[in-house]
Length: 436
Image (tube, rainbow, N blue to C red):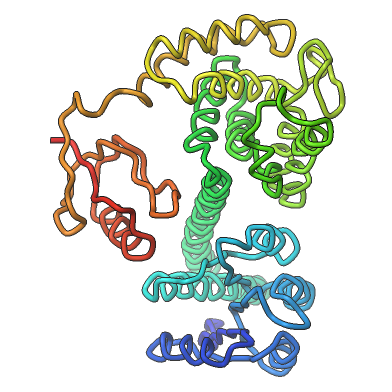
């Protein structure tokens, strides 16, 4: 029987123009099973790739002279498409992160400064994924070889088919698990982008709009795939506002100068452009482009009217309008005010057919969001006092305002470790609030 060849050693290439950074990375991974190679520039990294076999993972810094990390990863993608590409970037380089995913086909991005344990686990996962893909290729070669042998060994046909089927089933299960992991990573990336967008101050706006929009879409009977597209588009509907001055974004439309208003009105198209190259998000980009179209045709950017506006865009528009109307207020009075504001725009800015679905879910969504946690009973504890089973009574934000976990989440071992890690990396000025 044809035997599976031994797995070749996988090499990981780190590219950074700072020598101290490369030395630090080499120390972090000195005890790992894979071999670490370093390059002080993108050009040297390309030379190493052309001369070295089994480089399965590349980790590149974004800010390098001559050739940036995005440009480097884009070249690697063309020359070595099977090699997994990871970008090292700072929170300030959001545009570079988007480019790394769009142009360089980045598998993951890692923000600086990193946590050593988390970095090691990410690289291990990438190495394992590369090995799985290579192993699947070798398995295909085995299947082809066995098909030729079956013609000569008819007496052993049943046994051989059973062996082959077992092998394929195992590999299929592994590939299925890999696909699920990739899908989970994709969802996590969309969520991460939405949280970065909200660092400007609109905390939970995207999340609330996404929750409302998803419920309305389900009530309208759209397919599961379309519901997910609406949800992703709602989470990212304001991504085009990145790059617009805060002084403009803090104004109401009526307060903007004509020049400021023209700049602001570009954000819907910019939002579509920012994510269009990501195949899985292309349909969401269409919804983002049209979420400021008005039902009566007076909106932008294309002046669409009525049902010519995509249904997902109309759903996001009515959810966005409601949340903006009441996001600075609290309680049922605010919800009623917001719904009255929506009702006043039906047939003008908003689709009348969506109002009943919005009204059906609005009070539940905002009641859960705005309930005074003091009525539940809560206590502030340090991260060392957390234990499995506790329930968060307030949202957890990092020191720089990034939403980490929502209120109502029940803690387990994984979530507790994540909280402790973030409190070390980006600590807020208080402890964790839990129900008692």
